[in-house]
Every structure is written in C-alpha cells, then in structure tokens.
Image (cartoon, rainbow, N blue to C red; front, top):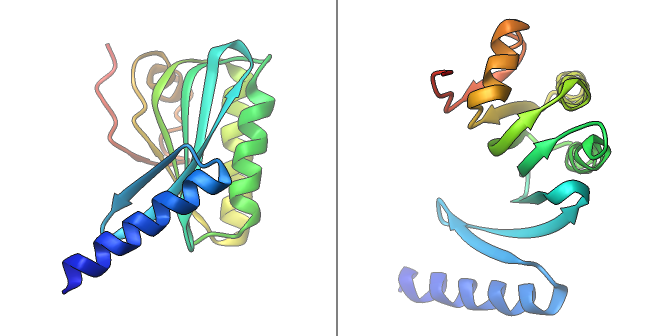
Length: 149
C-alpha cells in the first residue's frame, strides 16, 4: 500500500515538474525534491532544490569573478527561505577564485546569523587546496572532502 502511494506521489511530482519547468525530480529518503537548473555565464551550471526546510544548491564549473554573482544570488535565494539546513554541493567545481570564496564566506555568515546549518560537500582538487591553505575548512561544515593532490 505504501509503495502505491509513493508511486502516485512520484507521478504527481513529475507531472507538476513538467508543468512548472522544473528540470529534475529526484527521490531522497522518501522525500521528493524538485530541482531547477540555471545555466549561467562561463559554462557554469547551478542547480537548486529541496523540500521544506532542507534546501540544496549544486554548482558545476569554474567559479570566477565573472560568474560568482550568480552563485551569490542562488545561495541568497536559498537562504532567504530560512531553511534548517542548506547543502552546497561543490563536487562539480573545478576552480574557485577569491570572489567565489568570498561568496561562500558571505553565505556562511548569513546562515550562522539566521541559525541555518550550511554544509559544503564534495570539495576537491584546487577548491579544497584553497580552503586548506586559508584554513577555512574550520569555518565551514564540510562533508565528503577528498584528499588534496
């Protein structure tokens, strides 16, 4: 019986996604997450989504001064809803400059002020090295860190 109702919920979410232009719907721990994808400048893609008080932002590409504003907007929009937690997936980020780092620090400050748990996930390679040399891994809740090369 529970399996049937879950299937109906998924079918309903997929129909709603098609009507509203949502790019992806996924199941996570029996919760349905609607996800919107925005293509930004310089071949960066930002995917936002979540349900209720759990929000997520996934970033793919190179974060530079020319596109960190789009990341700032996505993080600010996610934090505007005052979620309990905000997960920022950086596993698709191959490069992060100081403007991208400043954007993440600003988001962490806002999250701390409003009581939101902000977690960075998937830091690797250059972005992880950047965090390590600046000793910023202590400032953020980081998950899924890979050893820097």
